[in-house]
Length: 249
Image 1 (cartoon, rainbow, N blue to C red):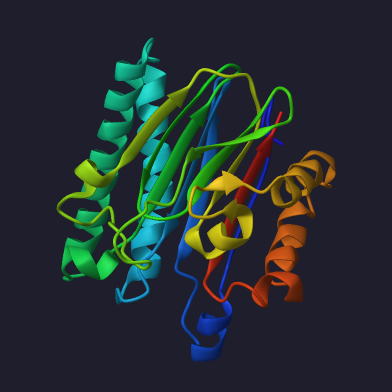
Image 2 (cartoon, one colour):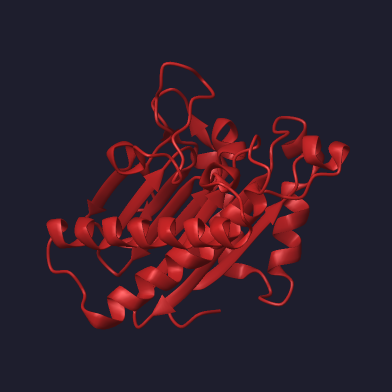
């Protein structure tokens, strides 16, 4: 429970990493700043030796960077929100770069995607570098994808926060809508959760999840969400690491 929001998130190892003994390379974080919810999800690149470290630094660093900026000033227009999120991405990339230097590794060794959402009563401002999606539930209980998986030339083509062209490839959006629910998900779930290739949210996937988030015992909710992500109905169709972050009013 977090003020006006109930939030539950989980990141679990996918089937491939369970078999190989590799750690989960997804991470998530969230924080409430006044009436605003800040949430982030990161997915480390499977080919990066320290992907799990990059995603952890990115998810937690992005939330802290956004919170620091929001505590100083809240933007009043779309351009201001994009400038804030661009600053969050830059600061977070610097944090990943500093961690790489501390480990005496190159920046690509910590390659990761990053999704960030800042949600208020009547808007969501979001950015995304790489795969995954940020989905909002509106006042009429319909679902809208604020950001979607990018459609590259190749199905596994991804731009990471650690890529030189990360900012040019980033999605930025500010929706002026009444928001009563948010979901951030990593790319392991996007084929289950979204109607591809246009990225339209599946109502049957998202509606029960937000109902669960609204009614679950806060002390047990994370474990229950982890078990859902590791259930046969999910792992039979998704073998990557999986992250869901759910938030409801």
